[in-house]
Length: 230
Image (cartoon, rainbow, N blue to C red; front, side):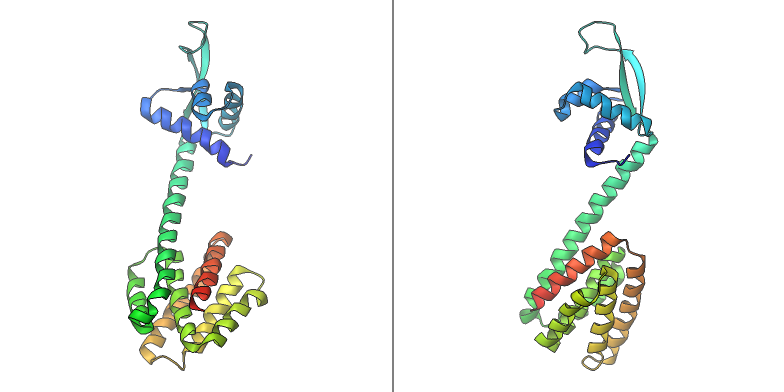
């Protein structure tokens, strides 16, 4: 069964409570915290147990009306810990992506003041210090888009047409990179061409390795960058 966001909420609640107290967590506690019935909480936690995310223990309840009655409580397993780590990494990843995205798109508003060559030089200098391939790819898209902007509205329109010509995100990105690099060869000097060629080669490699989600994020970024460049 898919680990939906709703089921993750229950899992994370158990893990957080357990880490705070070191004690198994009663399903009624979870139901009260999440605002659901105790039977809904119980059913979902049992499902999570069946799939290995939780394990249960029977203990003497202090919450039931009948004192001393044995009730079931839940503890997170190592599998739950792996999910939580992955979820945190995903959140951190998206925060880093969003920050880079906003920074790069914002640079299109600075071109008149700083000049396109200065911005391109700065972006190319920053790339070696970046670790995340998707952020590097966004930088390359930004550099190429600024070059295309310098060539005029007709070139930007040509790039926009790629969205209709290529059916898949990875093909859009690949065609954009190749077309944009080819368009800049006669318009920038050799040192920049060499740097761009190296970066675009790496970009093409990344595209083939990215997930569909990552390529979609980059296509959306490309679309927004071309819009800013108009």
